[in-house]
Length: 413
Image 1 (cartoon, rainbow, N blue to C red):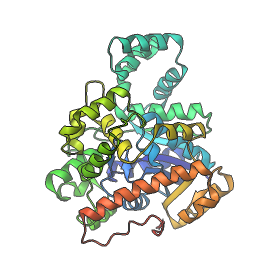
Image 2 (cartoon, one colour):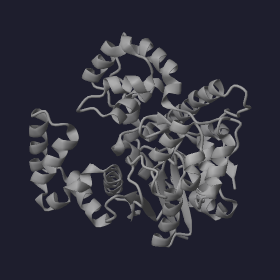
Image 3 (cartoon, one colour):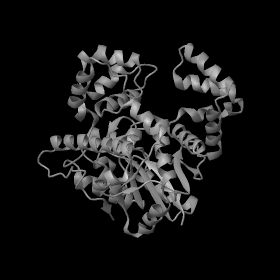
């Protein structure tokens, strides 16, 4: 039995995602495909357009065999933590042979070369990095300058370090190397539009383009052909009933949390140093909403996405100290099932036989199966979903909606 893993948001699931699943199975000869999917919050620092159960169902009906939830501590993490948490999850299942991801580069050897050079961090790299940071360079620019100094053979390929999926792919390769994992990385060339391309002119357009089209029109009319029919039908069935959800829907709870923590500052959260904490405090009187505040806080050295993640860390009470503890204990304590296909039952059996973490299908089993910090990590997943569900119910009060994490069953397709 061969198994390929894919790390995803599916926000929402579109034609490119369906292509990737099919291509990943073809490239690797896999019998099964496991998805490690962000829950109700995604890596760019935002709530998902639709909840994790609807998105998991679209993935299963779009070719996946098993969907596991990536804990929110990593789903909302920087590229390094996002990759490290997801790779640890796959590695600890004990049965994943390959990891497949899309990239603009499409060449795993080049991505692996960058990963090896960044992992090495020799004295030339460190000295050049420190020098450029002192000169006022933003970290990505300083890192690239350090790479040119320490690994000059990569200079012709430095454009690889300018696009989102390449950078994330390099982090996947780094995470696999750090673990000495037996999982082999594969990459597919990202078909169609790039991650940040908002154009709808390509059948394989980006999830960003679909979200922006939905925001602009208030309906799904422009995205009909950009998603597999089953994904479109599922999203349509809940549109105006439990979705779409946007960052600004969280403005009031975020403002409350910012005010609550203002006296102590915000440096206990990941990605927030004293400078950013002071900036948040100084600009808090001008708070007018989530996205507006992100725009006000961003600078040349701090992107909108980094600010959005930082604010989500505050909203969800994600703590730097806890993240470091989880990292020290190998990131992952459980594999929480969101859904699976009936014909993938042998996959579950294999994980139970070979994995080093428990498969969670019922939250009631957690106390007996998990150590203290595992329960703490899971509690934050539950809390994040409860916050998300409360906003769904507030936005769509006339729609019956099952937001109870303890009673909602896993999906079986």
